[in-house]
Length: 62
Image 1 (cartoon, one colour):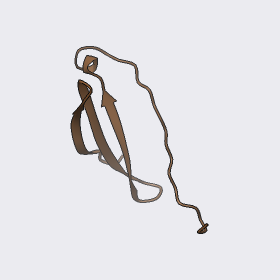
Image 2 (cartoon, helix red, strand yellow):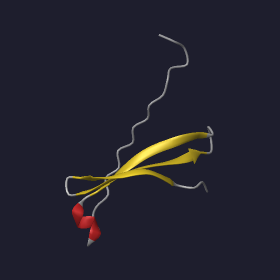
Image 3 (tube, helix red, strand yellow):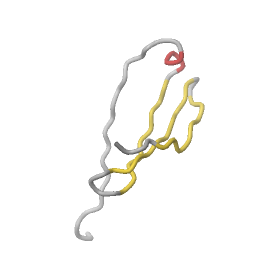
């Protein structure tokens, strides 16, 4: 398992927005993602919503 690195944490809409990265073992490149935690997450469990966005370059230039 790779190590999760915290890149930054910011206050946002009363909660926190954290930016993280880890080394993706298949490509050997860093994978970055973020997590928003609303203010209620400090005191109770809250639902999690996942959005998966994949950005990649085409194999051939357009």
